[in-house]
Length: 282
Image (cartoon, rainbow, N blue to C red; front, side, top):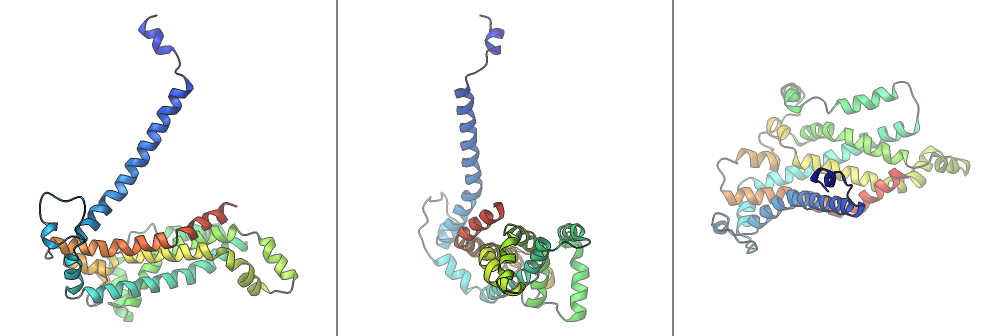
């Protein structure tokens, strides 16, 4: 049989399936390495002494020396910036859920004129790049007295997080059958009582996940924090300001301080996030 004839012979299904599995697992391994390797090197250098950070060759296992972290925490202005980041992120979380959850409930339960246009406008708020709006926002904040304040920065971060809060809570509320509320109405509950006793316990995992997502957006945001604050900078803006003059071990420790809270929050609410998708898919 010629080579051309051999090339036309179809391969067995088992060989094709095996090749697909190899590609599948290779893609998973590459994706995990893409995410985990930078985090590993960041945490490894943050948990090493300042001398080990700049030494070569590197050790695969960190020495768990707290020298870099102690230097980071004792660096002037770090604790204040860290507290500002926490306050701004918490305010962003409260405001985004306070405005986003009612909007998501209204979109899932009521039919009104312009409903589709409203959903499009919510998404369009992410279409305008923040650098384009930075100067007008700064001028407006200076006029109303919100410049260089935690509340002003939290309002900007809320505008970044509220589209996700609206869309996530909308999907969650839409996954809860309206018949459950109607049954509560027939048993003597008004709309608020039906929402509080029936709907809220079911959607609480999704609202929690949306709140954590808003917290993470605010925690990692740097551009607005760098432009709108001077004395009350968040940790990201503070690290950006001192990046060129800070030693290498301070940069690694600061990066770990930004990454670890986000990872902790994600792992803490992972079961609520899984429950959220379970409700939304029913």
